[in-house]
Length: 203
Image (cartoon, rainbow, N blue to C red; front, side, top):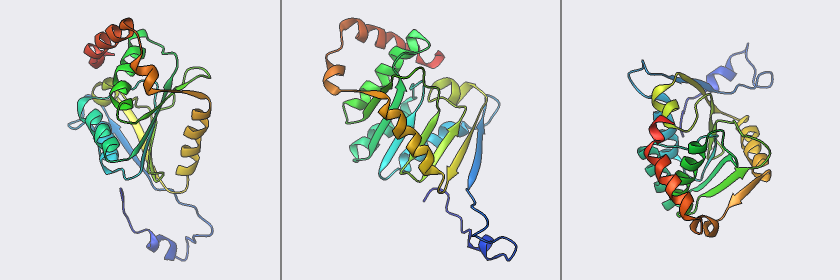
């Protein structure tokens, strides 16, 4: 669906037998300030747009730009299950409040938000439909998508189940944020979220 390439010719080669080799299709995706295109950002956006059943995101910094945020909203409206795992305690105060601002726009539409309790989560992983994953150095934020040198792997194949199970395992060590809890947050939270949203591009 995402990277369709016929690999049957590989297994018909008498030297390469399917029973002897388990091939995992992997594509390297890199980006940086000297690139003409924002390759990792465009890859993330493409994955979200093409999702049919589920989008699972695990990241320490959930600070998406407007196109990605709108794509996630569109996915939720279409009935796609979106689960996001972030730290319960951030390593930067404004990042914590920015996380809360951006996931707030999604939780209202049915996204499942989980705050990891067992230390600071540093995983940078996206799994779509249990079929394709993006794993690497890039956070889900402006810096990684537009400013930093980053490298990620786009992975297909049976190994995806291991990455999916990793997210499921981390969810078991997390606390789900309820819609009621989010709606009843205090005025201080709302002010800090608004400030963090304004400075999100430099976080």
